[in-house]
Amino acid sequence: MGVSLIQDSKILIVKVGSSLVTNNGQGLDKGAIAAWAQQISALVKQGKQVVLVSSGAVAEGMQRLGWKKRPVEINELQAAAAVGQMGLVQMYEQCFAQHGLHTAQLLLTHEDLADRKRYLNARTTLRTLLDLNVIPIINENDTVVTEEIRFGDNDTLGALVANLIEADALIILTDQQGLYSADPRKHPDAVFINFETAGNPELETMAGGAGSAVGTGGMLTKILAAKRAANSGAHTVIASGREPDVLSRLSQGEAIGTHLQAGKIKIVAKKQWLADHLRLGGKLVLDDGAVNVLCKEGKSLLPIGVVEVIGQFERGDVVACVDAHGKEWARGIVNYHASEVRRIMRKPSSEIKNILGYAEEKELIHRDNLVLL
Ligand SMILES: Nc1ncnc2c1ncn2[C@@H]1O[C@H](COP(=O)(O)OP(=O)(O)O)[C@@H](O)[C@H]1O
Ligand SMILES: N[C@@H](CCC(=O)OP(=O)(O)O)C(=O)O
Image (cartoon, rainbow, N blue to C red; front, side, top):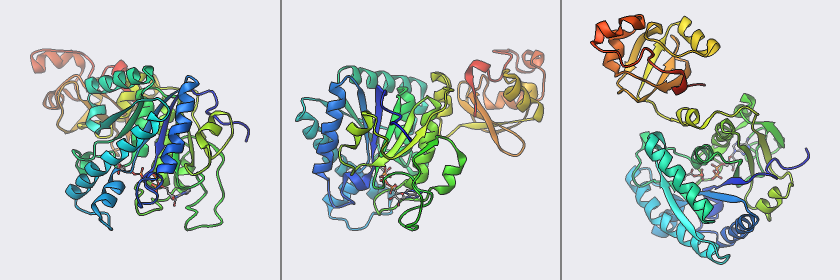
């Protein structure tokens, strides 16, 4: 394989995992953090824009609190994250200051990105910071999220941030050289994967869980993150954060790590936001004809094609469009409340006014507010 996919990238998301940042849970690795800060600063001085997504809050909090075992209770994990996050941002601020750059802390939750207004706010703030040559340091807001609403791993968060600001590349730095045909900790003869297409389903069968006691996602979340990042046109590189000058060398065109190339088709920004919803309010079960009209003919969803409504939602919520087997084909912003949809489903749009006493729109989901998956 020839040159690095990210040689010409202008906007980069760099994600660093817990085991790297905290030296496998031993405490913040100042040498490693200083080295990434030095390379990122050089890239910024060349005119690139870089966002850092950093894990390590829980691992560093545990170290500071003297806890040897990762707690199971969510409140203890949240407490550890709150303590550790202080250490993380202090260290980043110190290291970037050496190169004359400011840093900014952004702690995000899934709800921040699911709500359209907050999503747009987060995007504007991030772009403003980048235009000011400030390095945004992002982590999940662990202290306020519960198990049900967590991103859970920062690989996903990194991809969502890549989608948010339409980055050119996502670089995931971890404790392996990249992706192997199987977990190299368990299969020493596994083969290294240099170059693949992001979203190739075969990759998912190669990836195993987290390798260290402090990492959470393992390789699968990295593969899925690459697939998600590719939706907005970002290539992904998975590489070792311990490789000397890894970021500088990648941006100079050296093909280090596993390169997962994005395809040419890019989902436009609003549809990207729809596709990025990790949890949805409700589901519309469609008949086969409606699935066909949506997926093959590119039309809007009308009430006549809906056979069942699952869950509760308001007008304006994002809902899933599934078939009779539960497979999700599309999702979009619904024009009617769940109780209204239950009354107008299976009916032609011309009857909406008679049934409800008013007709906001003839479509349940307009094509412009719908994304196919
Ligand atoms: N196919 C694979 N190739 C490489 N690493 C793999 C694979 N499957 C599982 N892994 C494991 O994934 C680990 C990296 O994920 P994780 O521990 O979550 O790190 P991070 O903290 O960087 O996110 C590796 O240490 C490795 O043991
Ligand atoms: N928000 C958590 C991140 C957990 C996480 O995703 O860890 P990793 O698998 O190391 O990227 C923390 O800072 O501890």
